[in-house]
Amino acid sequence: MVRLIMGVKGSGKTKQLIELINNAAKDEPGNVVCIEANRNMTYDIHYHIRLIDADEYKLNSYEMFRGFISGLYAGNYDISHVFIDNLCKTVGREVDKDTELFLNWLDAFGEKNNIKFTVTISADLSLATDGMKRYL
Image (cartoon, rainbow, N blue to C red; front, side, top):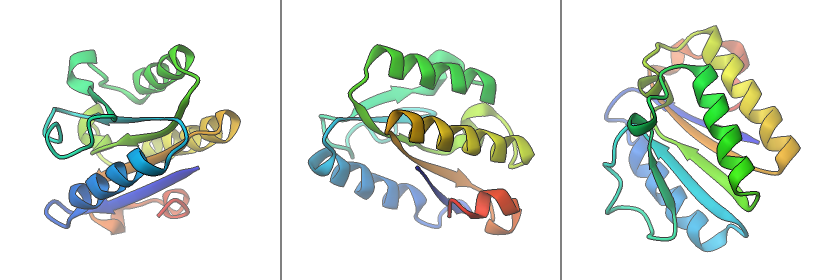
């Protein structure tokens, strides 16, 4: 399952994400992971959350991101929810068809492995492809 939170910079996406992450720390049966492009949320999220700085791993393409998430799960089958903050900034891309394909892959991966994904994208809603709109 994928949930997409999309909006322009300053629209409250990260604040909403922090609230969702902290609720997941209390409610999720498994481990919760948060991937962001830096460590801005270090002091905002619950200490039980595994915070990963994507910049440390040079996740600069969707293909690399797929491999990273697959490896993350291979190393910990107890992951129940993954939060990804500012996906397009992390991979250094604009919203495009590849973004939709990545979200579709996340959805299939999540269904297969019983993992929820919540993803934020800092871009105007009008840029969402028709395929991306099903995750909003």
